Length: 449
Image (cartoon, rainbow, N blue to C red; front, side, top):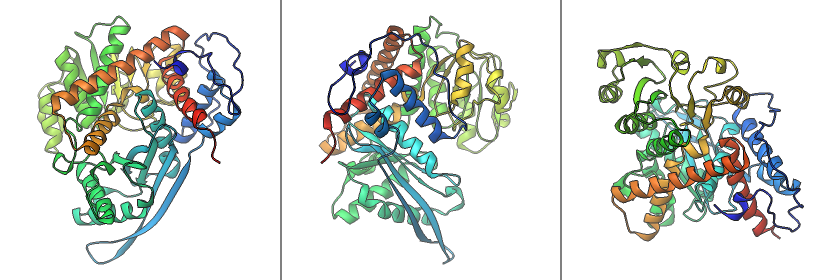
């Protein structure tokens, strides 16, 4: 752990900082002043909390609680029937103090600028916590990708990439997949950047197909990283991995990989759900059958002979060892938190627990593994992909997996050590480490001119 993040009392003295009064923390949760559970308000609340506990100067705090730049574009796309539709897209940078901006691109009909700003801010903390040489960014287009044909989706992607292209590049801003996007869209983005450059710029985008400069192990990275930190948390809390019961809300790529790895380690996955349905089996689920059902767009009931249908709310209320919300934001909130009975929650999605709900969970003694640690596997392997593209030297999947597990375990151990040393929650520990690292980088660089 670096000096700044490991000692809450050590400070750098210059015009950006003020002396810090040394004291110890009791671990009490700072009362939330959040009046709404929107993501950007939540993201700023997390920064405010960390800044207060670190006693950052007002100048540094003011910089870190705002995004650095916003590019919003309105761009036309010719649809297959010849009509033209104008779409709204965003690209947001939060901080580049530690390196080029890094973050996903989301295609979602309900995507908003505030949500994109929040995602960029969270990415700054995620990359800092993982000790990656990146800042935080995020992108979005207000579109339901399922209503577009493949050709329309390609035209939209190439036009959006061109519109935000002045921000992009291996040393400036490196996009990656998020909700509604995937390897094919990343390949189109990389190709568009390359066509404008006049040569192949494979390191400009991560999450690409292997054939286009992608990395082995990228698709399973998020779920694998989640499983690694979850099993480390079970060990740290004295809970047995063998026989631990698990419920997973969000049975997509992340949830499926995490479920499979936990089952292989001896856990018993009792319930899963996606945006359409859920399934519960007290003796444990047949995960292979459920994955096949997802792949072929079949219902869980048709694929699993044992068990019963279950709603998302019923899944969240199951008395399991571990609950994994791995779908979207604010799934656990003030309206349903009192029904949660899991002993531990691992945030597989970004921001699935609102601050007010987390206060209730803390009072109930429920351990929460924060998103900036739990779902950092994808950006970690994205870093590996970026490095491989820059060097034109690629690792095999075994090496990727070993490096990822090593990185996730190292970050997890740092968070747990900070949690124990300073008597703060795991989320507070993660944010104090991450915000501290970004603050130190910002302070060291100073203000230009």
